[in-house]
Image 1 (cartoon, helix red, strand yellow):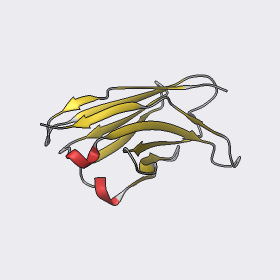
Image 2 (tube, rainbow, N blue to C red):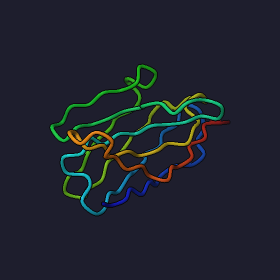
Image 3 (spheres, rainbow, N blue to C red):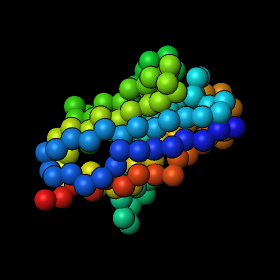
Length: 118
């Protein structure tokens, strides 16, 4: 089916920026909805941003105006540009590919840790 490989996490100071990348292989990407989720210690995984193959995007209220999701269809890669980072953005960030029609058909990446701290 394919896999997702994230990169770009790390330690950044409050107010800084990071860009996460998620490269898809195999038969996924294309028509799939690509999303970024995050999970902080002791909290549930939550949707951060998603982008459909048609170009629609949506964001969690907590990141609107600071984060931008973008797809590069030629490279089968989705990015998450994160600006004005806050300590509460600290979490493991996961890439997700979800088929738009076949319910339950989705793939997760292994996750990449983002730590926002001075």
